[in-house]
Amino acid sequence: MDLELTGKVALITGASKGIGRAVAEQLALEGADVVITARTAEPLERAAREIEAKAKGKGKVVPMTGDMSKAEDVNRCVAAALGRFGRIDILVTCAGSSPGGLLEELTEEQWYSSLNLKFMGYVRSVRAVIPHMRERGDGAIVMVVGNDGLKPSYWEMTAGVANAADINFASSVAEQYGRYGVRINTVNPGPVNTDRWDGLEKALARDKKIDQKQAHELALSSIPFHRICEPAEVASLVTFLASPRAAFINGAHIPIDGAQRKALMDV
Ligand SMILES: NC(=O)c1ccc[n+]([C@@H]2O[C@H](COP(=O)([O-])OP(=O)(O)OC[C@H]3O[C@@H](n4cnc5c(N)ncnc54)[C@H](OP(=O)(O)O)[C@@H]3O)[C@@H](O)[C@H]2O)c1
Image 1 (tube, protein in one colour):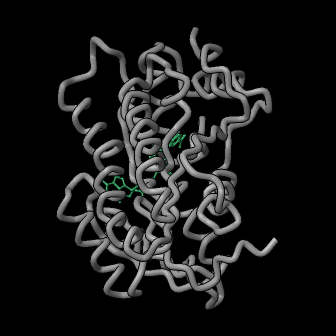
Image 2: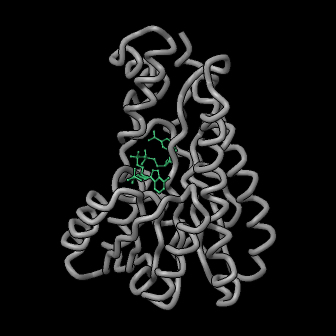
């Protein structure tokens, strides 16, 4: 199936590694030009070079450093992407990192940092592209959120709370901006094989006083496929939702967690 992404321009936040990078790779392979952001320049620039080489000239990949927990950085990246390509057809928000931990140990600062990046970072990104998309009467936004927004678990509650807020926010934006041709959907993975998941497993092991191997086993046992998801599998869903092939999908919150039953991770 031709996803009709050739020549589209995509901005992906948090894309030097993990899910964001996999999304950038698939969009570039489909012929889109891609702007990728992250805070750290070297891995971001390396990712851009590697993705562009893999896409064999199909899509350009432009790295832009920026911290999505700061409004001025988000606005600067959006303005620079518009300056470079003249338009943004697709926004994918991936820059998130919420600490694991238990209610009585989590600090005020940890709660704020989770909400500031995973919720407000996504709000800022959407807010910055919306006027442009509304004016053009076209745009696709995909927020990579997380299944703990739909299926809470007490050991990842800072992420779950931010994710639930993201899902609520996206529903409101879908209703308000659908009339202008702008679509917004959320993708909600369970455990995905990235550095972030590795960090969450370590936190789970610490909080449950088990080792990381046991924490990993708990994750596997909560998923009927007995494996965790790969970044490319999330990227395939995101790429479809970002494409014109998904033209009637708006305000949807799609789990991609292999029917995970989170309660099975509780020991
Ligand atoms: N992996 C999972 O199991 C899982 C499950 C559900 C949902 N998710 C969500 O999916 C998204 C991507 O997760 P991932 O697993 O791919 O994470 P990851 O492998 O840790 O990659 C995170 C990316 O975001 C960038 N980033 C982090 N903080 C940033 C900031 N303040 N501003 C800009 N960029 C920032 C990182 O680069 P720098 O550090 O250089 O900035 C990196 O490129 C996150 O929102 C996460 O919550 C992940």
